[in-house]
Image (cartoon, rainbow, N blue to C red; front, side, top):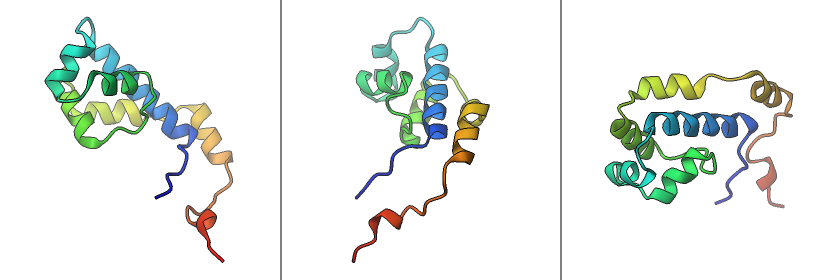
Length: 104
């Protein structure tokens, strides 16, 4: 399976998610929050720094639950597009995902 690169919008959304979780974690350690959510501390660290820009829904839901965030609030905070990423997404040429996988 070929995984397509993330768009600038996806990357920015991941950074916003990481910042939201980091702010909600406050003074709690990464280890404590990760263990309470059932994820590895390294996974939480990567999400908070934006290195995992698109974590799975169960991971986000578990972290939100541990941090006392509603999924509605997480979605609102993460899905609010900013100008730079939205402009980059609009300026990018539209390419069908399967176009690069055509075999002759």
